[in-house]
Length: 406
Image (cartoon, rainbow, N blue to C red; front, side, top):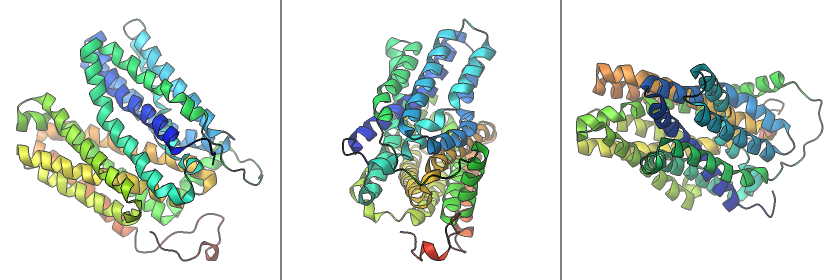
């Protein structure tokens, strides 16, 4: 841990990068619609830069774990992602659409660097005794970014035009470069024979599947995010049904993000109150209850449901990070965090894809299906609880001790 690199610099860089990332999707959607006049082209841009993250996460995580200075690789990823956004902005309407979509797909491969890539480096910044509080503060940057990014994209587009939103998005990522570049290097580990990237990928997935608390947290969060993706897709129609205009759906999302932010702020003040494993289950059940409440479609119930959903989603993220920090072997931490981010993005994308057709069929039905995914996630958590923690690869069972999950 570097004495000159404090948690403040980390949080500043992570907040700028993640806000730029959360802003980039809506900004691309708006600029695609503005330049081409085609909603399908705009949505294709957004899908391209989102879905390819599922492929890029594990590989980028392996590279983070293999390099001596992960922060510099993270900075390079930020710069490349920013250049991809700039290339899309300059080429849209001038270059063939397949070239633009290919650029979006390539840029999206680096998306997990903006999420799990940062978080995997947190133990190099925070002292072990301060890691729970640092984890809660780190989760706050996600909540803030999810609240501020889309709002900033809309505000900038209204004030200065849709292209300006993309420019501000990539500028925020560029501002994060110094904080990424100067991240402390991890402690040196004993030299071992270098393994191939494929071997490291297998090792990372094996750890996620074999270490029971890690497998349980990962599976629960991915299935839960299918429900969250369905909910987010339904918000325009929820706004129209309950509040009279599709645009008012953004107020529902703002209520969800604000509740997540407030709940995680409370957790940051009392990090010892968080029992990560139990919190993942409780927060998933809270999301299920919120979706059932939202299915009533009354205005007051909808805002209450979003507040409950935010109060569940915020702690779920903090607890998920805490489990990963606790269970991931140091030499595989980067891969486990970026792979986890990729899997969650995939779950969210599946939910978003289901949400449209389901909402067209029945809006309450779509919300009930989303609640069903949350219930399924909770059942999976319970099913994976019975046997106890799996053995870490390469660590004898007796050496691990008998400590229980905090």
